[in-house]
Amino acid sequence: MTPHTHPPRPAAPQVHEAPAFADVFQQAIRASGLSLERVRHRLAARGIRISLTTLSYWQRGRSEPERADSLRAVDALESILVLPPGTLRSVLRPYRPRGRMARPAHDLSASRRVFGKNSLAEQVLGADFAALNEDVSVLSIRETVTIDEHFRLSSLSIQQVMRATREGADRFTTVHTFDSGARAVRADVRCGMPGTMRFLPRMGTVVIDVRFGRRLAKNETVVIDYTVYVDSGDGLDDHYERRTRTRLRDYLLQVYFHPAALPEVCHRYYRESYEAEASYNHRVAPDASHSVHSAPGRCPAGVHGISWQTKKAGDWPRGGP
Image (cartoon, rainbow, N blue to C red; front, side, top):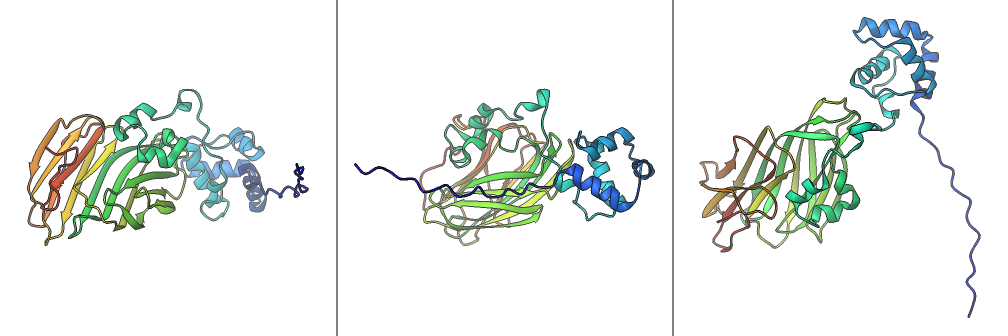
């Protein structure tokens, strides 16, 4: 047997660490020529009261801003020290939860209850599925679905209002799966900033990160607004549903159909979990704009959707009759 030989290991690459908040803050103080006392006074003049001890701790790296009032001080410091917006915010370390906040905001069982066990979302996200969007709580969702003349989803527009459940939240991750399949997907972010997008054509699934553009203070609200354009596959779409792990204050789902291909019958439905039968199932008729909608007066956790029957599809989806 020929022994295996191992080539010499290459030299370890040099790692360039990102600058620490303390270093950037200290350099900015020196460049400004201001004392910490003068900085504190200028913050106070803007209604932001930070102690001299706290500023000293920040400068020496003993602590970093985390609370809402501290993050407001960071934004004001960028102006006081004549720094480009985001200079200090961008070098803050991710929020480190402590005590009860160290526990996930969402229980894995709650996610599996509405997505189903071993769902496509869980397969795609892997270990990240358990902590999906744990930094934010969704308050309201308004989404518009467009169905083309072949009864395939061609676009999906979503507007969401969210509140940060902890300081440091900076993005929202969304997973969309298209029953008719998808050859290509494009996303247009109108409110927020486009982040990474991962498209898995074999699964007909896309994972999109929408960034907020900065780290949020705890309880701060944020709006994201984006549209997904889909080059659909050869299948048919006969329903659309929203799965939510928590109660929403407001939810509106509107589905537009192509005027040359209107459905025969539409229903809106609700299920308490992925496996449950529909607890309500109401027939809805297209309006003058060829659309149907669902706007539940209250929106509990679970699965909310609209299904439709066409001449090309005799079977009903899970939410239908």
